[in-house]
Each structure stands twice: as structure tokens, then as C-alpha cells.
Image (cartoon, rainbow, N blue to C red; front, side, top):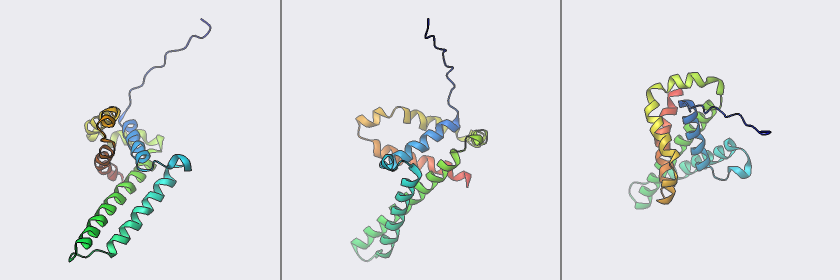
Length: 154
């Protein structure tokens, strides 16, 4: 009787909340050492710089006449892809950090609402990915799906 608690009304997550949680999860997966540095954007920018350096290094070793040259081209393309995906995720994170634009984002994502709901439901059930050792592959595919949604803001 002394400690009666009021029941909290459970507010359903809107599209803004779902895409925001997905973006944060991608950043936390992409930059696992951010906890030691206490700032996710700082660590993400360090990772972004590492991708840029790898891109520059492999670009200079591109040679279609040798097997290692072809490997360098593939490594360059992969570093370039990862760079652009992470850049887009960082920009999306910065846009989604502004809570006062919630209505704007919900309106903007209204046509992608079903796709975001499916991605979020798969994200919520991530214990299945852990059992099958699919966590890294899951986050790579999640980045591939989320990045095009976030590029619509630019």
C-alpha cells in the first residue's frame, strides 16, 4: 500500500523510434570499442577514416594484369562501399538525434513504414541470429537496407 506504483502507459513505437534504434544498433555493431572512448561519433569517425585510408591504399595498387592487382580492386570496392555506408549511417544518426523533427521523419518514412517494421521485427528477434552465428551477416544486410532510406534526407 505504501509503494503503489502507477502503471505506465506503453506507447507504441513509431517509425522514427524504430529507424533510430536500428541506426544506433548498426553504429554500436560497427564501432564496438566506442564504450572505452565514451562517444560513438568519435569512434565512428575513426572507423570512417580507416576505411578512407584503406580505399586510398588499395586504389593505388589496382592492376588488372595480376591476381593481387585484382584483389586490390576488390578490396578498394569493398572499402569504398563500407565507407559510404558508414558515412550515410553517421549522417542519419545525426539527423535522427534531433527529437523535434519526429513528425517530419514519420511523414518522410510513411511509404517505407512496412519495410522498417519488418527490419525492426527481425532486429528484435536477434537471439535467433546469435544461435546461428549470423550476427555479422545480419548487420551487414541491415546496413544495406537502412542506408538507402537514410540517403533520402540529403
